[in-house]
Amino acid sequence: MFKRIKNLIKGFFGLFVGGLEKRNPEALLENEKENLRRQISEFNKGLAAHAGLVEKLMSKAKKLDKEETELRAKTAANLKAGNREAAGKLALQLQSVDKEHDTVHAQMVEADTRYKELVRARDVSVKAAKDRIEELTRNLDEMKSTKAMAELNEMASGMVTEIGGSGDTLNRLEEMVEEERTKAAGRARVARDQVNMTDINQQASEQDALAEMALADFAAAEGIELESTEAPKTETTPAAETTKGTMGPEGESA
Image 1 (tube, rainbow, N blue to C red):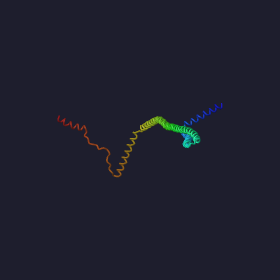
Image 2 (image 1 turned 135 degrees about the horizontal axis):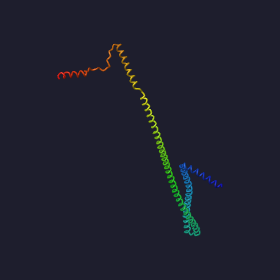
Image 3 (image 1 turned 90 degrees about the vertical axis):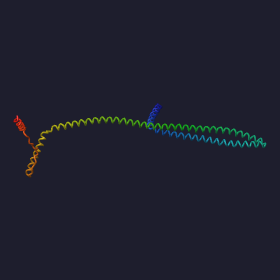
Image 4 (image 1 turned 180 degrees about the vertical axis):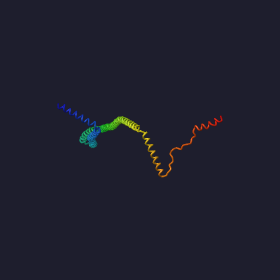
């Protein structure tokens, strides 16, 4: 039962951490970079220890090679001098050194080969990891750009919808204004039709006549002769007299 509870807690914790990772992938990528740097550092430490072993074997091989050369020279000298017993001992010692030298040399070659393989494996692994991190970085940048473009498109879509709604509002406002303007024009026309133009014209004529009378009184008091405002009458011959005069001679001559 406790195991099930533990698994349940781990599951909830995993979901929580997974949610955090999804919300902040940059932090997860940075953590992986740090892990890679730490792994490279640890690997380099082991690689340095292995390189030290190679150098130790190389040094020992050189020492044995020098010792082997000296023993060979001593064995040959004693043999030439007739010291067979000493030469025999030196020969046994030379065989032992030569065998050890061969063993150390083989170990040195194997260790050096292994060191080069480890260096190559490290370089390949680090390059693959760096390439993957760079690809993830580019993907993250692309994701940000795509997300920003999606948000911009959503914003533009919302603006189009809002602009359409504003257009409907403006249409209703235009209808209301036109209706009120029509009502106001109708009220103005009704008010204008209710005005009695006959009375107004009569009042205007009376005011003009009073003005003329006042002007005549003023001219008479000042001795100023006013010109008549009436149009001069032209003398016309009555039609009957003209007709009679015309027809008289014709009648006499008849």
